[in-house]
Length: 298
Image 1: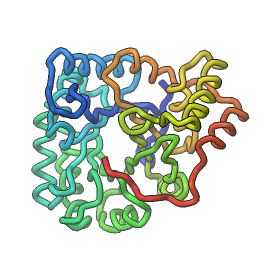
Image 2: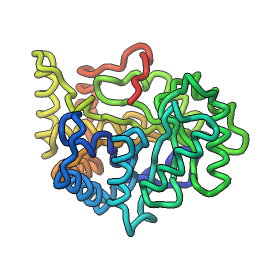
Image 3: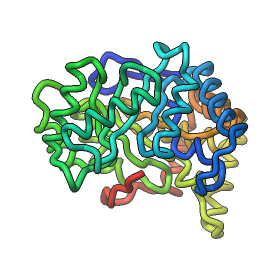
Image 4: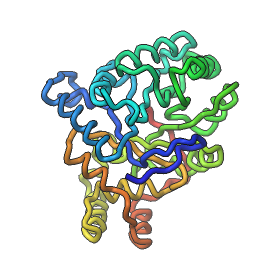
């Protein structure tokens, strides 16, 4: 697995990691957990670690903590191999609430520290200064190595940076897929300037449905299939390869899957190059809009 420097830090991270949104829910959102399937999710995460995808992202919101518990199972006995990330809900992001949420996440994950702790999206209830003060306290106590945010626009990032006293923002995690490239206008360039790593989530679109069933969507799918055929790859691999080369200095992606076949597929998405005309075809089919657009919050 190819690695690159994670923003301003001295950490080298695989450019493809592992997301965990809904890994605990096998009911299509109904919340019915089946042990065989959740154990498959654990095994998929463990396979990802074996294949070099050692960046695992989770959150207290995911399954009300259940996803964190599954991640804890997956990394048992191999914590030092993993760059472990979790997030605090904005509604919990008061000074005391942030510290409490972090401790609860650590308990579910069965670890004594997080490599990166994120504010899941901007809070309407608590000031960014209050949250960042708590984050810095967590760093000083050794419970968190790095501080980050998620779903922040440029102005919100600037506010978070100003609120820091002793630390720096290490990461902004945002939605990024072929149909949602607005972050490439302002957010990616700003983060590159500030040496803030950008981690894109849902690289295949929400629920993995990148394309509509329209004729236009079918044409785009066929174009990706043709590019994939030339390289002996799959359309998913073409997508991940493209997304991680848009701004190679500071962008990463965290596809989620509980399917071991897809884990292997994801791991083989880099280490080869798209041709210049193929990149041009993808850019033409999935253009960057002329504005950032509203940031979605998941």
